[in-house]
Length: 121
Image 1: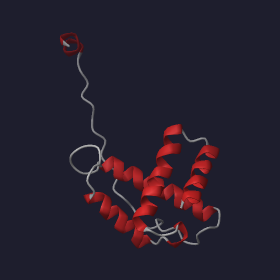
Image 2 (image 1 turned 60 degrees about the vertical axis):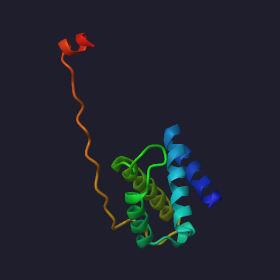
Image 3 (image 1 turned 180 degrees about the vertical axis):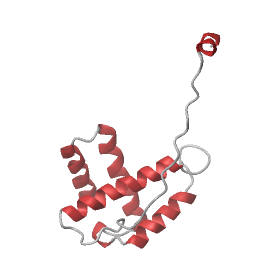
Image 4 (image 1 turned 45 degrees about the horizontal axis):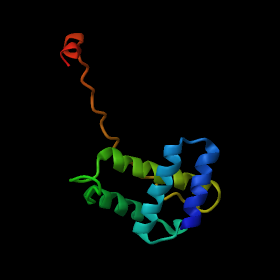
């Protein structure tokens, strides 16, 4: 598993991803592989669906409550990017996420303050 995650990190560096992505995407992949206890080549669509369901109920490790929709969506995005690359280099014939769609979290609208409200601050 360590090698796969390292190769993924190198791939992201090669593509010019930001440092934050180079850290976060492999971390998300590692967490997924630990959860499934499978080699990347053996992952099936059902494994991804089960992991997605697990993330829906997993407690947040830093604060009270569950994981945010944005965090879960980011996790799935990391896995999709990985499996696209894994197939591209010939390590998988079928991408386990090709037919899966995950809801896009709603963006919260920012409240814009008026000039008077800013002056009151």
